[in-house]
Each structure stands twice: as structure tokens, then as C-alpha cells.
Length: 276
Length: 276
Image (cartoon, rainbow over all chains, first blue to last red; front, side, top):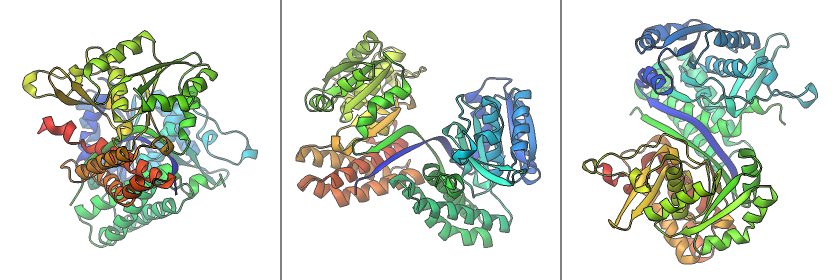
């Protein structure tokens, strides 16, 4: 067999316990003083997590101006994303820090896209050809530092964002290299979830990895990532659920990140459902 | 064990037989008509290869202005690189296509760095602290499309360039993310080498992979790349040397590319020798 494939993933991954403490200095490398920092979180758990991290205070100490958007629901709607996009323009956001599960990170990606390229989030989703053209971005988005708090979606390293249209009762993906986060800060200590969520998100990562492994679009590189993710999840998920330790959390965070790298190359059912 | 690592590799890899035929259209995506394209090759074999590829003619047909620099020796000297850098400025190069083994790709990286950031190639190499500061680049280089013709160095996906100082009789590496190629076009059909060169370059890739695997800087991701490279080389190098087929060439090209990805994260002895 001779291979034929492409590989590209521009995200800078910083992985490890306490890596989230580096966020303020990282922003210092990217942006000047008085920069406007948009923080995205979910409504409750991740909002409280950001409080415990003292993220706002730490950013203020470095001379940045933090703003908080904590109204992102699970399965974020196009409406919520559009509101977040207007808010990004209102605060003239220079950079986005998105702390949360896949929904919060997906919402930040789509909101940044809409804020910089106009229109509505729903304009950018994949859709059947007879529903008209998909809006194509042409401008760089506001850079995103993605900080996952679940070990599940791998959204911190993918070019996808799943958008829900509540009116049409549809869920569709945006898929464009423009929405790759600039940095993925994977701090396993932030992925300290209740037992049920650990199990559900771990199975989500397993599903991604298996799907990617058997995908028609699988490449030698995506297979490497997927295979390692599967091995790690089978080895560590039971322990992560029954008696979590820093070690099991670290391995599940790595597995989820690898599953994300795998699907960043192959897509998943939700990103491809419309292309078959 | 909990992990602590970083990962980043911005190179876009396009891998497969005949992938090199895409070079003119790829340049079309990146640069406008009448762009000046600098082609780097070695003195004999890769120069002839570029002729057989009709690269100049194909670029001219697309409206680009190709220029050829084919005076790169094995283990390129700082002098040669500086001359190549002046030449890049003379022809106002907009993009570089480097077709050759590790020496040719390394020379293109260093020449592009010098052309855009000034000084001499030797100013940028790693050196002991008591020899003074290392020149730090601050400007983007002229983008490089790296097209390897050996399955050995993996230079098409690394941030390194090894420079020889003929006066001091020293060989030292430049190591900076600025010199990552924009694209790596890995076309196994171009890596059709004489038996001895297949063996030597294959062992070079094996050395890189093993070294990276056991490196103190090894990460879960570099280990994945290194382990797969080692497995492929042990499986395919004997056949690639004794009775090469498209399949063995494809697998060795993949192995060399993976070994390059591994050392892009960990460095090799030559890039680290001075840091211990």
C-alpha cells in the first residue's frame, strides 16, 4: 500500500498539571498591556471554576482588562453565539480565553468567527447543497486560548464547532481551519468532574477515537492518535470513574486530546453527516 | 505518571505519489501572478530531477517567474548559505521551493532566515554561552515548500538547519520555529535513490527515531511518532534497499517524515549537543 494523505494542525498544545497558571503570561506574549480579554465559561460549574482559578484577578494584575461571558448553555444555539459575537465587538476583544467543556469552546470558536467575518453562526454551518451556499470566512478570527474542563470532545484542537438551531431543531457543524484555537491549555486538574460526567465524556472521546480509526478519511497520523487514545481510555476510564486520581485524570485528558487530534484530520459523524 | 509537555508543528504535510505535481497550484494559492519563485536544488542528482519534473516550465505556465539556485553542497557552509541569501534578495523571491535531501532543505531554511533577518547564517547557530549571544530572528521568513528527495532527515517538518563553518571546521544547528517550512510535499516517487543512499538515509531516520524515543525531552506525542517510525523502518528498510518497490518507498518516506515530526519536538544530538 502506498499512502496518500494530508496533515496539518496549527494548535499549540501546552499539557500538564498547573499549565493553566500560565494563561496570563501567555497572553502577555501575544498581546500588549490594556488588552481586552474575553473569558467564556458555562453557566455554573466552569464559571465557579474560573472564580477559584482567580483568572480575572491574575489578568488584571498583568495589566489586562478581563470581561466575562458566562451565558453559554450546553449545545449552544446560533442565537447565543450571535449574542456572544456582538458582545466580543462591544468589548473590542483582543483575545479569548474559553474555559469549559466542548460547548463552551465550540461557542467561543463560532462567536469569534461571527465577530470577525459577519453574518450569523448558522450561515457558516455545513448544509445540503440545495439549501444554498455556506458562508466562507476570509478574515483571521480573534485568537482563542482553549482550556478544556472535560476529557471528552477534544474541541481544543479541532477546526469544528457544533451549532444548534432551536427554531429548526437542527444541530450542524461549522468546519473551517479559521477556527482552530491558537493555544490548547490542557490542565488535567481542571478536568475534575463528577463521576457520571467523567464516564459520559470519556465514552464520548472513545467514540471519537473509534470513529476516526475506522473513518474512510483515516490517515497514518490520525490512526496513530486514535489508536493511542483508544488504548489509554480502555486502560484508564474505569479507574477515572470509580476512584479518580491525578494519574487517571492526566491519562484521560491526554486520551481526549489525542482523540481530538485524530478527528481534526478525519472529522466525525456530526461533521460529516451532511457530506455523504 | 502525569504528563507535562508541549506540542506544536505548523507544517502542512501533503504526502503521496505524484503530490509534487501540485506544487504550481499550491503556489497559486499562496502567491499572485508574476511572483518570483526561488528553486533550490543540489548540484547534480536533484538538479536533474527538477529538470525531469519540468518544474520551471510548469511554474512559467502558471505565470510565475522561476529562478534556480543549484550550488548547494552536502553539509552546506555558512558561506554558501549567505550567498544564497543575497541571491534571494537579488531576485526578490516571494516563495522558495527546495527540492533535495536534508542539506538542500536546511540550506533553504537558513538562507531564507538570513535574507529576511540579516547577518550571516553562522550568527544564528547554537553555541556555548561564552561565545556570545545567538542572533534572534524577529521577522517571518520567505515561505518554503520543502520537497524531500531522500527518506532520511525529516528536515521538511523540523525547525532545524545544520550549518557548517569551513574555517572553524565546526557543524552547528540553527533551531528556531521561524524556519519551519510552510508546506512539506512528500512524494515517495521522488525518493528513488541508489541502493547505498537508501540504506544510509534510512539508517539516519532510524537513528533520529531511536534518539527521540529515548530523549529526556520525549513527550507522549513524540514517542508515538518515533515508535511508529522505528516499526516502519525495521519492517521496510531491508526491502527498500534490496528490491525497492513503490510500497517500500512510500513506507520509508512516511517513516522518515514521522521521525522528523518526533525530532521536531525533542531535538537530536546535533541540535542539543551544545545545550548539555
